[in-house]
Length: 299
Image (cartoon, rainbow, N blue to C red; front, top):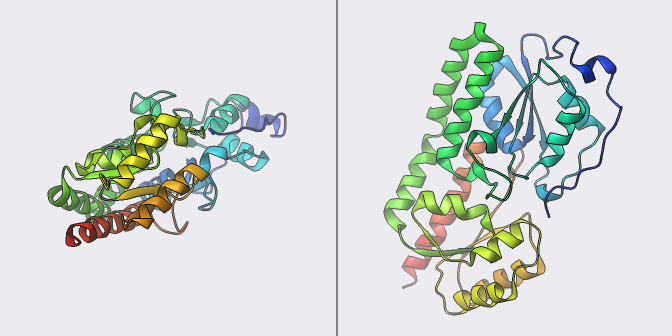
């Protein structure tokens, strides 16, 4: 299910709560809080030595949809120069913390609003390479707005991030060139944006993927349709969200494995936590390409 929020009241010092105090950023840096560590990794690379980034949702073994905020999160939000939230219902706990701690100094980047998305839309924006570029541009613009003196430095960091993304973008182009139109399946909507970018034909029932993403039981008809797609080997690879496994998705995974359909695991947050956004994504793309290659060679 979507994020469950524990209400937080009156635990931040008065000056921070009303926004009248000075920035609490570390000396010579902007204090940035990212709701999730995939955006935090990008923010860190774009800010370099001029920013200090704290990511809230980081646990690779937990379902981010079920995250519950705490007083440490509230304090970080109250002290931030910039808060980056995913939006579209993915991290509503963050909006509640912002509303509880108003600040005239703090800036906010809501990714969903930036992209013209809303609650109910597929919130896995970091799996769309075009959206990643848009968000990176927006973060850089926020940094330059807050710290105009270092604008040229932030431009340099933005250029460096483009270079760092090149293996990731090159792998996307390679997979699209080799496997465009190949039918694949996914246990939830996390893979929709990537499948589109890769030119893959994601045929899993939309109702199944959306229900699982939202923490609901998928419609019975969609379960039957998905199982039939697997049994008939209509899909060449199954993509499986390792952080939101349910009895239904696990059954689909086991069914695919039992008839030798390759299964590729993807995650919602960085795995492991210490890697960069692009290295995490590249590793998953390589696993996917290997699975597609394996299917092609088996024919």
